[in-house]
Image (cartoon, rainbow, N blue to C red; front, side, top):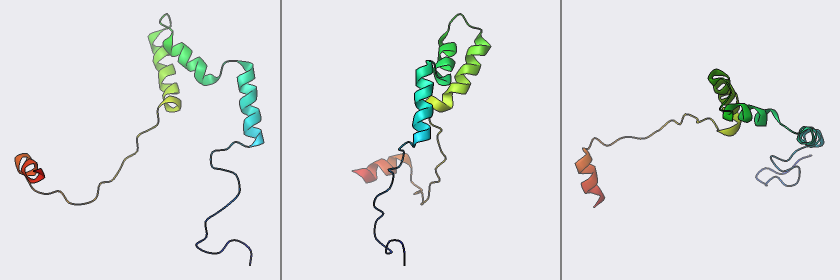
Length: 92
């Protein structure tokens, strides 16, 4: 039977997040050409002489590459029916 035994950890292989040859070549080409699309959008966003709507559109387009989206988290459990003062007293 091929494969590893159940319960044994996976070993070997490519590490998560490592780039393959095609990705590395594409990133090298983009870097050699000079300005990446993200750098261009950020440059437009920071240009005080540019039209305000153009700057806003550039900021909206660049935001997902700079700031991660927040995900919804479901809270489980119970909430005690205490007043704020009762809860503070229980901490002492």
